[in-house]
Image 1: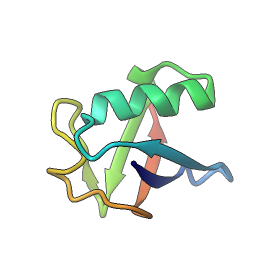
Image 2: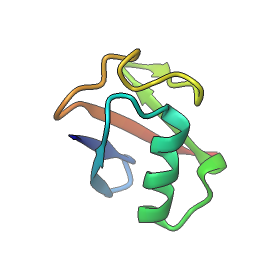
Image 3: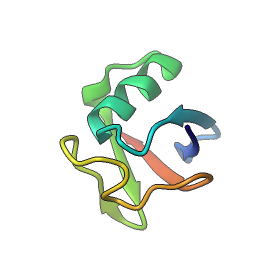
Length: 73
């Protein structure tokens, strides 16, 4: 189990627990529950690259303590 840091640049910083095998779409659902928004309204980026829903976190090299940027549509 990993703990990933998510920063929305509006002052909210979340620590989200997940597995490396989780897809980005599944990860967005967990983040959406914590924020109280719809998962479709969330865009995640790592190093300026937008993460696509069908690809796993492992494929994007998301590891323990990785920082992801969160944007709202």
